[in-house]
Amino acid sequence: MRIALFATCISDVMFPQASQATVHLLRRLGHEVVFPQSQGCCGQMHINTGYYPEAVPLIKNHVETFQPVLDGEWDAIVVPSGSCTGSLRHQPEIVANKEGLPKLARYAKEIGKHTYELSEFLVNVLGLEDVGAYFPHRVTYHPTCHSLRIAKVGDAPYTLLRNVGGIDFVELPEEESCCGFGGTFSLKNPQVSTAMLADKMANVLSTKAEILVAGDYSCLMHIGGGLSRMRAGVKVVHLAEVLAPTQDEPWFAPETTTKVGA
Image (tube, rainbow, N blue to C red):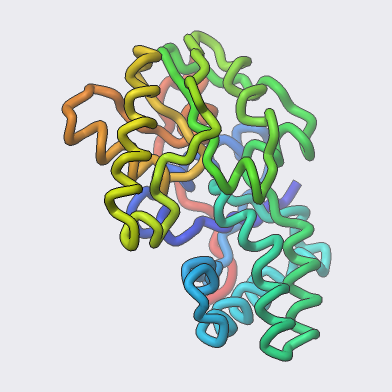
């Protein structure tokens, strides 16, 4: 397959290892990965806070950038984030329609149909349960709110994690509870957010896991920050970073994708 990577803002700016691991994994599985350079923010931050007109240029840019998937140049768009995947499937169409741009809405909707979160792409599209990964650590997994409720990736991350070689996977108590990040929610409601974070960290620590895994670095940033301040000794790692290495190649080398566009 020829796959276009949508890297996401937070990966691009703060946690590039998520996108690097995604590229490495997909290439290791025999697929071509391209990176359209004109991509930008999906617009979720603007949309969630009610800035619909300001989100329109971002939606237009996304549609223009990823339209080749509708022309058959790419087979799919893969995103290392349940949050951005969920947004791209639903929000651009809603905003474009409300702003009186039905044609843009149609294109956004069609592109959304070709957009997949990493784990669901591996399991539901490629039909894989075991990607040949090796990660000899005690791990627990936090299913982020958007991956559960918006992108609806289901059991795909669990299926992949349970088939990783060497892993000691332990389920997280009250796993479906929000970590308290929620984008601007953590800024507007800091006390509530902190209380939710405290509950989440207590559950993580109860597993005695070395590493907390999730499919969104935004949530990992929030939980990881709290764990770091506690000096808990628990690292946070994106799902792609667990799935990328093999026993013969314990650590992957950062790579760059094929560049597309100016």
